[in-house]
Length: 595
Image (tube, rainbow, N blue to C red):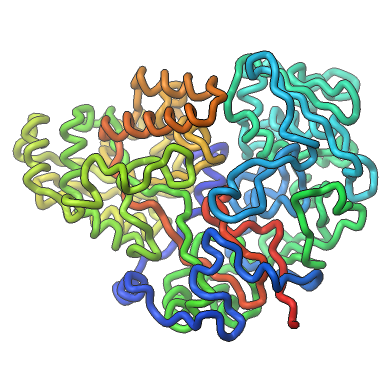
C-alpha cells in the first residue's frame, strides 16, 4: 500500500476525518429514519448487493459525479485508484471484464472484446482469444489484436508510464527481457515475444509458467487496447482514445472531466455496457464537506471515490436522508502489523500479547463504529476474496469473548515471551489519516493496561514507501506496530495477500510485507495457488494461507471496513459489486425516468 505500484488503488479507500462522539452514536444505531423510498429515494441499503430502481432506468440525461480527488491517471496503463478502474470502463474495453451484476456475482469474469473466455492449452501456459466483430475506436477504425498487444506492452515502459499495476509484465516477462514499446527496435514496436498476433482478430499469450489468475490480469484496466498512432506517452491520461461507449470531451485536471457518447461504438459489439446517459461529468471539489452538501442538495448523483461520506455529511444523511444511503462492506481490512525485525516482536507470544491486550470494540469505535467503520475484523482475508470466512474464523476470539480485551491472556503471553512486566514500543501511523491516529490512540490506551507502553510516531503519509516501506528504517525507528490497511487488486488471495505475506515480496524500499514474513509453508501455498487451475482447490488454498498468517500472529485486524455511500434519488440501475470492493458499479448506471 505504500508504493505507487501497489498503493494507488488502495490508498484512496480511507475517509480522511476523525469521527466525533455524537456521530458514533448516530452511526452505531443506524440513525435517522428510512423513508422507505418516498421522495424518490430507493431506501436504505436498497443497492447494497442488489439492484435498485432497475425498471425505472431511462436512456439520456447527464450522470453527475462529484469527488474531492482526481484519478492518479486516466491513462489505462497508469491508473491504479479503484474508482479509476471502475470509471475507465466508460471509455476502455478489455478482452474480459467483470459481470455487471451486484455483489459476489459481479466479481465473476465475462467476455468483453473477446468472443469467449479464451482457450487454455499447454497446462495453463498458453491462452488464445478471438475478437468480436464490430469493435471500433472512437474514429470508427477497428480495434485489432495488435492494439491490445501494444496497450499491454506499455506497462513495460515504467520509466515513462510509472504508476499502474505490472502483474502482466511480471507474469509474461519475469526476467525483464523486453524493454517496452518506446525502446523496441522492431519496426512495428510489437516485439514482446510472449504475445503473438497471428491476425487482427486473434491474440495468443505465452506464459513461461502457469498462473491461475491470468484471466483476472487480462481483465485489468491496464490490459486495455491503445492505438499506437494515438499514444501520446506521458500525456495520454489527459485524453485517452476511446474504445468504449463514451469519449473524452474535456478534462481540466483537478477541476472537471466530461465524457460524451462515442457515436462509433456499437451496442451490438458490446454485451456489457448499456450506455444509458448521454453525458457523464465529474466535478472536483477541494473540501469534502462542501461536496457532501452538494450531494445532499441533489446537485450531484454520487461520489466518484466511493470512500464514504465525511463525518459531517454522514451525520446529516443518516438523520434526514437515510433512504439515499448504502452501507457496503468495502473489501478492505484495516489492521496493525508487527515487524519481526523489531524486538520483542520476533517472538510470537509478544505479538499475541498485543492481540489479546487490545480492546477491539474501542478500535472499531475509533474507526467509526459498526456502520461507518465496519464489523470487527477477526482475520486477514477480506470478504470479497474466495476462501474468506468472515467472523466465522476468529482464532483469537476478537469478536467474541475477548472483544473488549483479555488482560489475563495478554499477561500469560507476556510471561511466555519473557516480558512478564511488559515492554515499550512505538506505533507508526500516517499523519494525514486522522482516523488512523484515533485508532493508534485507542490501541495505546488499552495496551497500557497490560504493561505495554506504546508511544505514537506520526510520520508523513505521503512518504510511506521510504518510511514504513523501508525495513531498515522500520528497525532503526523501532516501529514495533504499524497501522495500515489493504484491499485486493482483483478478488483472489494472489491479488490481495501475496505482496503482504510471500517472502519473495520483501523489498528494501516500497515493501508491503511489513511483518517480514518468511514462512516456507506460506510461500509453498502461494506457489501451489498460482499453478492450480481448479477453483475449488484455489479457494481451499486461500483459506489455508489466511489460517497460517493468523496462526503466526503477525497482524491485529481492526475491521472488515464498511462505508456510508450516497446515491441520489435520480439514480437508476444502481448496485454495489465485489469486483470494485463494494463500490457502485459505474458502467451501467442510469437516470430514472420521470414516468
